[in-house]
Image 1: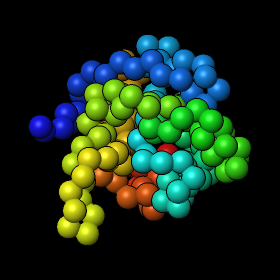
Image 2: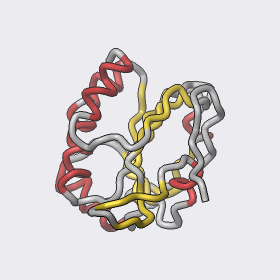
Image 3: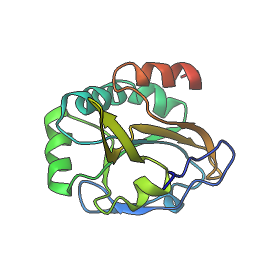
Length: 156
């Protein structure tokens, strides 16, 4: 099975999933806003913590440029609450335990580590414009340095 790969200019897949507080967040509710939707494997792990903290540190410039940042993982809400509190994150973390949203964005698929293949979350980031179209689809990004590269790409 090949993963879905979103392309620039295509309509971003709709989603409606809970944030860390159990409030449903949907792409439709964000229409008219620019969105940075990033997918990460697991809260409270070193790489994902680094990436989340980098997004948190860059939140002011992203907000000034009109972007809403959302992190998405397969973690349960309780783990997201803990992650957000421990790292003092100021943006919503979304819980996609069913992986439906991950798969719609092509952020779940074949990975390999030490020669072993398995399925898992593909660290990916999507920039969605005000009309709900994909402005940038960045697959298999690295946890470290990704936010700096994204800021450069978006000139933020």
